[in-house]
Amino acid sequence: MEPFGNVTAGKSVKEELQQKQLSAMLGPAREKLKRYSVQELCDKAAVTYEEKTGNFIVPSLNMQICVHYPDFIIAQPLNMWHHLTILQYMDTADRSALTDRWISLADMRGGLSRGFGFNKDIETMFRRDFGNVSAGQFAQACEKLGGRLQKNRADVSAVIPYAPMFPITVNFWESDDEFPASGKVLVNEMAEHYLTIEAAGGACSAVIFEISKMLKKQ
Image (tube, rainbow, N blue to C red; front, side):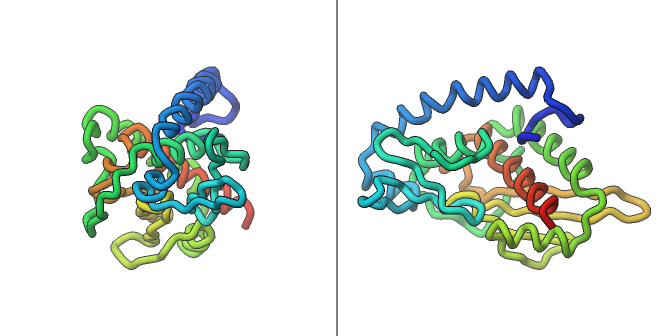
């Protein structure tokens, strides 16, 4: 199931509408990127450009995503949210330095109206997808996505690079006899310099979706 789809099984009308909306957003996202030179995009988004292939290389979730220039087509099979937010990242990025402070999506600009909804959807994904997952399994899945494990109060905490300047911290608590599995995601306090609240919510959802896919392969 794609990020932010219906939490029940099966393809819903809502999901199909979301997919159509996302697909319609790809064209305008590509057009926006045509305003920039190759060097501008490399500098502001911390990506590289291969003249031989005509591709920008965007590291994301332990993949090297190739964004072709000048049409900004991504030929690799990505879920729609991942595809769209990579393009939006390249457009929004402004070279702002990251800090050591992490915040909830609700703390981003515009988060009061959208961030809480994103957080609720992501918490639902944790309960739905990771009820029988151990801390060790979850940690292994995070590492396969390029995540760097760190110690805090969570059973597992990993910083996963969604884009060169857009890391996402994923905190996971495995289920026990009293509580179901739960988790939270955090973004850098400079996140709004690289993605809007809507795109950041999509990015965080995509990370949880990819962790779920990794676990199914174990």
